[in-house]
Image (cartoon, rainbow, N blue to C red):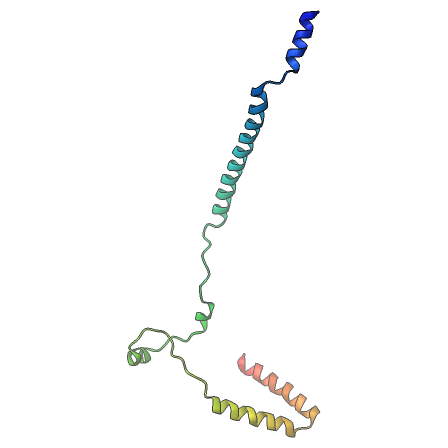
Length: 126
């Protein structure tokens, strides 16, 4: 009977190895799973992005009119299209004339004229 009591006491005693190595083994298993998941995710993402290219850095380049050969020879530079400034006086003159024309018209007529003009402007563009 004394022998049985000794075995029971021995079982209830915790080992230092069990206390340290169980959490350590669990931690290493978690780290290994994280590494495996990261590797699989990287491979899948790399395969998904295969063939994808970076968009153009300046999307406005599609609207630039390239210079003709004469302009290139005349300019002697390969900088692209030339900048042509807007004539501010001409724009101001046209705007003032348009405003005066709108002010002279009756209100209902001016609105219908604007709608008609907007329709003709869109027809010209297309």
